[in-house]
Amino acid sequence: MIPLLKAYPNIGEDDRLALLDFLRSGHPDEVANATYMDGMEPYVTAFKSDHPREFRSGYRMLLPLLGLIALVPLLLLLRFA
Image (cartoon, rainbow, N blue to C red; front, side, top):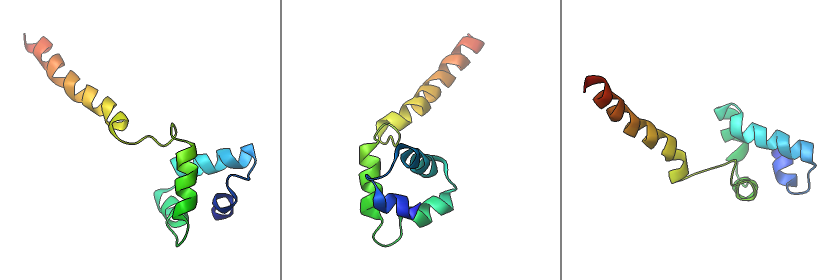
């Protein structure tokens, strides 16, 4: 995957999808080794900034968790009311 990262954005659609799949769902150790080697951070940052929907961060990732946290007390109230 390192050659694909270095060649980005001059890669084909199939390679882009393979790289996206690797970064999103690859084995964490392999992803860390490939993305945090010396000098690879700018390539990973560029790829992630071009694909913001696939690499969500911040409060949007917490919304489902917050919804679940709010739902549990509501269900408990309904069950014991």
